[in-house]
Length: 384
Image (cartoon, rainbow, N blue to C red; front, side, top):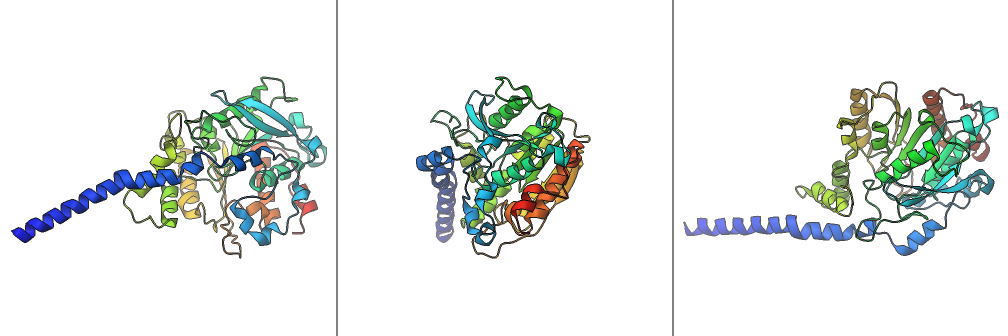
């Protein structure tokens, strides 16, 4: 009995220590580690404020994809100052945000027509990027050259966009940024301050969203005709499990929930635990999906947002909900160690073919001709 009692005490102590670790120590450590994600370095933020479509740069983890980056001269893809306009607009909660409107070019040649009659593509960046870098500007330049208008904006606190109050996270993994995306739609479709030369009707507005960007949640509940979801996160819990595994913590029970709690802790209106992207398909405000088109574009070689965690689940659920889904799943891995092949398709080896696929998709969404067999920016700037 004495030995049995000792073992009971040992077991009790182990359980108590595990509970303390799970509910006190580990969350505190992880939330502390995530602080820099919510409140980025001031020097880096100042750097983003100096970037625009004319002086954007290659930045971030994709710099490790050296073979691909070396094949592109960034100056070829920087937009002439006369071909874009800096504008400011309000998020739906009153933050003043910086945007850039790129009027479509070559519309008479491609068949789209004048910018005032052309569709406008709203680009929504993910958690880490900002407007003035490659994942936003290469597709924007490509779309603009085919005749599409493009609207890009910096989420709250990035570039010259106003930040929320200091007690909240500047970046909240797409949760509070929903007010930014909603504000962009209202700005484009109503032109409330007259800063644009024209407003774009809602039926001529499409979304291009990358990685952790939140545009699909706005798309689901509005009568928008189309969206491109490039490497998009499906379930934040699954993504946090992947992050935990990469940090050697994947074995810990409930670790995805701890990461989710920390990621949501700095949000004003309910974090991504209340705005998990996949859940947008089951909410009461889902707009009729009939005839509305989705292009799922995901590199099977993606190591950051792994293909198998996200794209197949999006495909299944979107089709079940009634959306018109097209899939595009290239498998294009980089040779260099450290290149995660995430959101790299438009500057990888077969970038011309990937952009052509995007162009043809937008043709189908808006029932226009954009001469996608002759993708102008890619034909003139790339050898492949």
